Image (cartoon, helix red, strand yellow):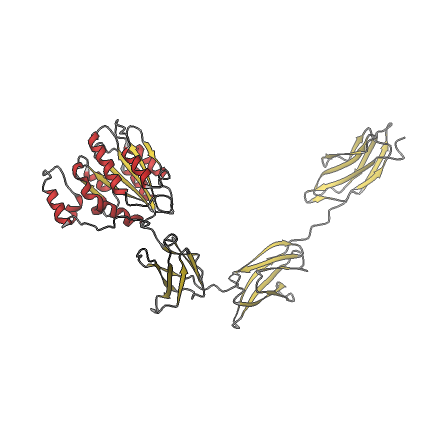
Length: 493
């Protein structure tokens, strides 16, 4: 009956004034039955790109707004559901409202019916660049619904291609006047359900099909598997029963086994559950059925494959190496499967091995009493509770011990005048970078210091205290050598 009604309405359309792309592609307009309210069905972002230029008549603009209001009315709005934004196309783009502005239908409907047309030129290219900035959320599906009269489309193919790269599905409603070939290239497939060319007076007849196309894109992925390991996985869903009461019935099985491996009843406010003791490298199907006396829900399903089995030690590494010790680490940590770890290490090629026993809940240990600058072979073995063993080896090199730096060989001080002293010294020249002097200056005994180049072997110190102490140390690239100190007690009166 509904399909016949549409055909009767189509008879009143003048030939050449209206045409429905969907009918040309499929030969008939498919009517999609939808519930009166599409509550909690979807999660995604919808950006309306509305032609508001001067080529659009006031009446046509008003009809477009009425169409969008009716199209979006059944959706639940807000984060976690459907977010709607509207961007007007004119001489300059105008963001009428962003995706987070309206969280209920009353607010959205009022905003849609109160929009004022911009007029001006049709700068669609600039508006599409703004759309690229708005539709960036990678966590949800994204739809851009472009409503246009098709006049002066401009260079739109490149920015639309960029939107598609961002994961945006482009749907188009054209009021017949425009370049249909450009629109065909711009729309996301399938064309037959995403592109409509229709006379503005009959735009309502595509409302249900367009809404169904949007729902297919943004229908919420209610049940998904996350945090998958070789033996476990977490199932996560939106808690549709949290306000209705009821419970969830959950069961799952390996694909090769049709009988449920586990069956559980979960509370209505639940939104996730962890499945454990799964088999590595196995594909499972999980089923979740919401049960409520207030509403009928479909059974949700998801398939996932556990990771291949990884036996410890799969990775062994060394770090924090110093001349006489180093740290060895390994993974993954599997205390539930492993009895203990054995770490053996010995100098290469024929050093006597040393053994260390490590508990199953540890994945590192420090190897001590090593020789500096020596290469060691380190082997980590895991003894599993089922009696199996697995081992992995790695080479570790200790750091060389720091070389003893040559000391200062001679230091002499000579009194010149009251509170002035000539200081002279000798030191080996190989690797020498300079000298570091330190002394007490004046009666305050506050220490003073200075650095002298390697060519310096003497200096004059003035204003010394009567009992000051002078120290000179040689400086090498690897550190400071041992210095010599002397007192000026017998030089300054």
